[in-house]
Image (cartoon, rainbow, N blue to C red):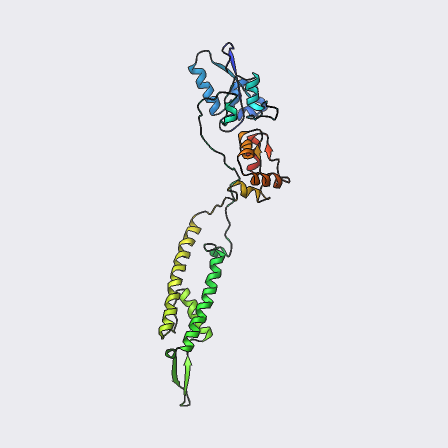
Length: 309
């Protein structure tokens, strides 16, 4: 509750870009005289306070930074900005403060100027470098294995069909005037014929039996589908930058130990995970984070600085 008898309203806030920030020129030690009081800060919340001061007569404010947004302690008291409001140290809190049921029981909130949710912020993944085997990435490893097995299987089928079908055998006259029976589809020729069909190239030999042509037609249809899919995926892979987020949920965060992580201490996000999140996921996060950064950071500025590394 604002004390209207005061000439100056004490406003508590926290450093959260772009809502409240310290001016760049005020970070230099030579500009201390020009950066006293409210002139030291800028951002959306500061602009909002200045707009209220221009439109409301007699509204003068003094801004100071709090340590954190505030959470309820085990003894029932509050820390951070919430504690300053309840103790009377501050009259108003203007900041990026989450509205939840627990806070609404002790303080009054205005209409929110932004509605958002909980998200995971990580460093932007590095651009993927192309290697010698990058041409194989449009298809998964399982698909490549299936193609190899299908290639060998179809070659064996064509070889067996050509051996048992009489239409694949022919009588040839030898140089000495005799006759011999030959078959073009040997093991090597079957492998070569199947590979050439997969590469969409022709060969000097073609099956003459009905069974051989059926097997070859099935293989041609299969290769047409695979080659078309591979060509489309390869074009998209080469033209679009492939960015994969390594973390997409709390469970993904708990299952890895490479990425260091943290949560703003004393805020609604930490309370949400403790109360509403999966107990198993929260337990894994707490246990696997022993060798990482402290899971509860003090400020968002610290979290942003570590996430950029």
